[in-house]
Image 1 (cartoon, helix red, strand yellow):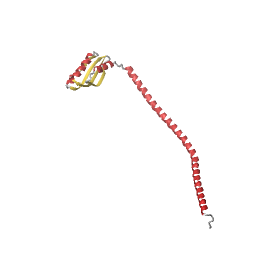
Image 2 (tube, helix red, strand yellow):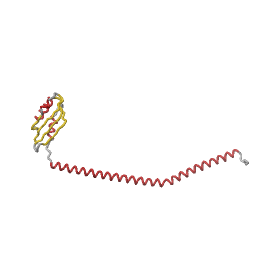
Image 3 (cartoon, one colour):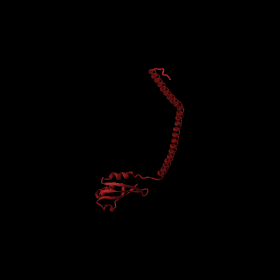
Image 4 (tube, helix red, strand yellow):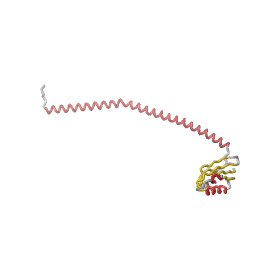
Length: 179
């Protein structure tokens, strides 16, 4: 076949052909993407609606499980309060606070109280037992004398066995109180 076009025109035709081809390819890609978006939009709307529905169901189930737990806790608290009210109404607690305050206010720095046990012996008498450690024998004797001087205690008993050591003495003081 004969070439009737000069070379410069051939180049122009070739470049226009490539330009048209590129434009066609780009437009095709654009049409495909737009069609994907159009077809994807309803699915996106449905998934949003489902997500809202599921979060509402989850919140309702959490609230209902919390409500049931709260009801169990409330019933337990009411039961305990009822039992405590019964105990408080049947038992008469003596006024022990002044005795404990007296013990703590007369305690000197070398005396360490580890345990304080209150025992009700009858309606009119009770005992308080103090267990602890004294740094020296003299501080222990001083503490016992201070407790006796308060006149709150009927009897303050410090066993002789507490004086076996000179320092770091483990002691047990038994006191009797009148209520």
